[in-house]
Amino acid sequence: MSKIIDWYLDNSLLSDLLIILLIVFCDTVLPEIILFKFDMMVQSNILNSLIGTSVSLAGFILAALTIIVSFRSNIACKKPEDAGSPLELIFSTDNYHKIINVFKSAIIELTMAFVGLYIVWILSENLTPEHILQANVYGGLLIFLSVVRTLFILFLVLKMDKKSKNE
Image (cartoon, rainbow, N blue to C red):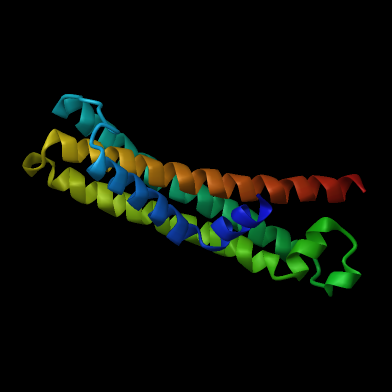
């Protein structure tokens, strides 16, 4: 399980794209997967909410990235064998750059979701309710995956910080 999580975190943009493409493929082959039917006004409201959510969460993740960068600036970089705490160890190895990449990719994904959903919103008068529903589902999924991944990493880093303060 650990190797799967590591691969997912190392290849987060590709992984999320593959997950969404798999769902798109399944929905194309078996259109019964997404059966929800809403009127256009409800879908438009959901679309507007997802646009605002993606921008807000990109800001949140940027703030979390700032926290992690500030952790590193307060911890002296040492060789891994000289690290005195879990945080010193994580910031002294290649893991720091992996963490930064996870957060950067999440910001990129949320920006892509914002742009994609905004384009759908602009074109919504010319789209069918099914297309807007699909944009809502796939955009929401992209937002969800980005947030869960970054929160997972953030909580791991905060847990290590808590351990280092208890020692």
